[in-house]
Length: 115
Length: 114
Image 1 (cartoon, chains in turn yellow, brown):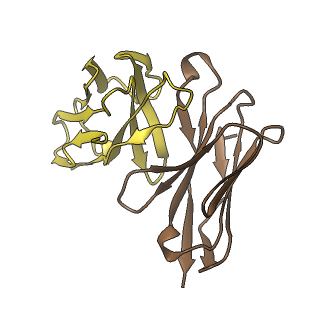
Image 2 (cartoon, helix red, strand yellow):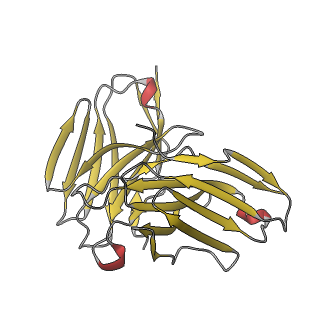
């Protein structure tokens, strides 16, 4: 079974450009999480969806960030306009909240560098 | 006070020794506790989860949970150089919109030297 798939794996862009990160969760999982990881702040939850519905977006830094989950097998995280301080590794994770075990499985991440 | 705190590292142990990683959490209602391992440049991967007070063993790994003290630890016996990584403690939210949401500690860097 394929794990969580993220694309692109690496992204280099210039300040002010729009960036779109993509995620395909594990088939059958009904919860999806977007995280950002930096050396200074560690692993931070940005937003999470349950059954394609955003449940908690309190971690989204500001209006420049938006996330969608149009169906159970796809989600996007968009940054518009991007800024150098957005440079980080962005992880997507999924879990099956219907089971007693809420283990989250992480994708390989997208390394974003905003110049 | 941070929601999830891990003992400051880095932690360096000799090969074959026991590595002890500690974590405290602030939400007394939390029910699920996870240890993830993250190699440099890679994504976090689950090592163990624990729900009940006491010890849970899986091979060389033992997770210990004490809900009264709001403390969870991970022991790695017979440490190997391949165990060198950052270890992340994660705690599940207590309920409401926090249910299913993991809060991660800052991580402890472990180095096992030959």
